[in-house]
Image 1 (tube, rainbow, N blue to C red):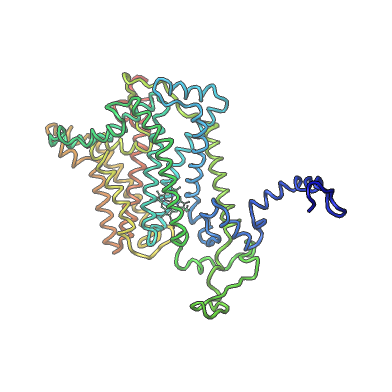
Image 2 (cartoon, protein in one colour; image 1 turned 90 degrees about the vertical axis):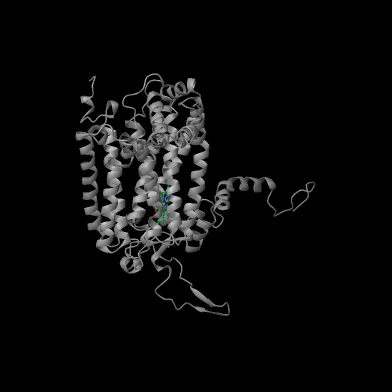
Length: 522
Ligand code: HEM
């Protein structure tokens, strides 16, 4: 290298030539320095591609063929992550225009909807992705349950998952208020009244004056007695900051534990069930495997474990990554399709003086609202707590191993789930039909004390019917898994039927109507 004063000697490229060469090579070099180990086209570079990348490092370097089958997960966990990513991107875009103050919130949403270029589309995608996330997380939980993937060592990840479910519902619920229209205002008012439901019991006991848990819960939720500006700023902060941060933290633990728990659940005999790798699948090893073993780090030799080990695994890059990208793109496509054809609702500006009739909570709480109509305490607090505690206990009560990793695996299996579905549907339809056509205790004996109605109402009766059936299955099959399969299936049926009744068959004053065209005033 010559000094600045000297001219370059013969044979040494001129600095200007080297500069131009370097300039030409910039795009290639950026690619090389980004991937560091070159294109991922061999076992080694594929591995380094995954664990040398901060985002991909959450993945294993190789994934078991069982976990890569669509029917193992239906991609539901990744679909939930995809919904969240879509929500973050569209949510940040909406934040450029949204103003969280009652007098301008509605107008800013109107601007987004009618004035801002692509604003309506972004808002629609956000709304649809939010609803999809709730559905997908519920389906993911059902898939984990029905493949018994909550069993050891994954018990605690099931609990983390429940946290994710609660936060997902919280995110959707807090977002519901932000448009500040009639729909939002009265839905959140209903939600806040559900939070206040312990008053039903404290009133009946005459202790509300000293011990008002319900009132406190409502106050914490709204920041005041009514839905107002305190509630709006509170919901906004939870929606855009607190809950997303909690969700991200929980997701990190959720994924980390999947790795530490040895990947996704699969049956013990998964290797035998899978059989040999088909010829058209990307080769298991592109380089000759070099398995070695160490004995206390003294003796080194070739592994005696021929036939076991990573033969049934495939490199995460490309197999897992391509599957995940496919789920991601499908999720975007569905959200976009909905967004193109169905607009997010926007009613008149919120008016605390003119209640919506019927005022309905967000759809995933309509099953609870249906129960609240029978008993505020049981629908609002009692039964949700029973369901949450019951769900949390599942992995600790079912300690069996039969059927792990197999759909509807365990004692009774598919037939038990089939009959539980029939029973679960019949019970909820029967109990609701009685309540709708013949009324309940208060209509039959008007003087009945409130505490009796709190204890004996359609919600508690249904819970008892489900619990008795589940105990019967537990005894019949002599298996805790059978009891869990029966109970979970019954509750899913109850949730679906009550949600449908709350969504489509309840009109003004929460009366039952076969069709909205029968509502008074039509
Ligand atoms: C925001 C919500 C959630 C996200 C983003 C999420 C994400 C994921 C992903 C990506 C996987 C691996 C692939 C798959 O199984 O599809 C997974 C597995 C798992 N999830 Fe979730 N999940 C969520 C909620 C839940 C809920 C509500 C539960 C249960 C209450 C749960 C329990 C589990 C368990 C136990 C596994 C391991 C399954 C196995 O070993 O086969 N997750 N989750």
